[in-house]
Every structure is written in C-alpha cells, then in structure tokens.
Length: 106
Image 1 (cartoon, rainbow, N blue to C red):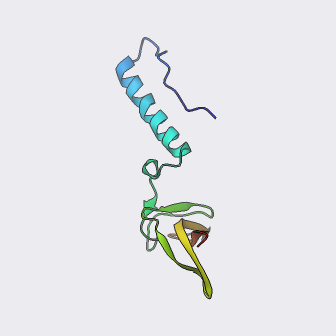
Image 2: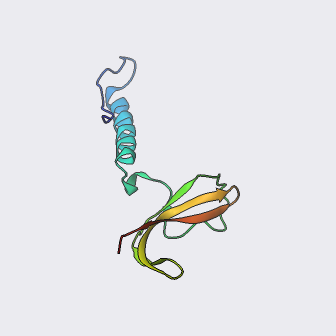
Image 3: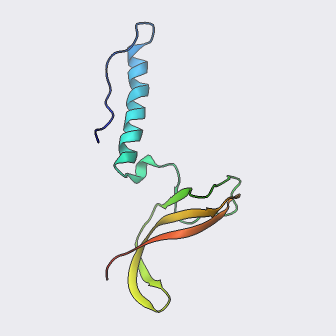
C-alpha cells in the first residue's frame, strides 16, 4: 500500500500555501497512523480510561503510552508480556476496558 502524497493541483480560488499546509497535515496524520506510530494517535495513556465523561463504544482502543515488559501473563504462568493498551468491551462512560497483552516469548 502506498502512502498518501500531496499533489499540487490547487484550484485558483484557494490559497495554494494554506491549502498545501492543510493537506500536508492530513497526509502526515494518516501516514503515521498507517505506520503504527503512537505519536499519530490521540488516545494514548498510562492507564485504562476511568471516571471519564467521554463515551466509549465496544472495540474502542486506548493505547498504552508507556508499554514495558511486565510479569506473568496469567496467574501461575511464568511468561512475561507487554501491555499495548486497553480495549473497550462494554459501552459507557468510561465503559469497561480490558488489557491487550502480547507474550514476549520469555
């Protein structure tokens, strides 16, 4: 899949400089999202949403802004994991969120 690119075909009635700046910002946001860059995301935090006035829907993801290797992936299982964020499993304000974990293989 190719990245979004900025084409310089701006209609005469628009300021080419302003239009170019807007399109460049959109391209940057979409391209960094498609590359998986955390900096492109608006919902990243150090903990799951709690006590929020913001409504969450099932499937909404809040990324962990500080993912680190953690202890046992499950009680009694000696396998480290990385928490990458939380996924909403029940709608609400803030809803119910469950950790998303990936085993590190150690």
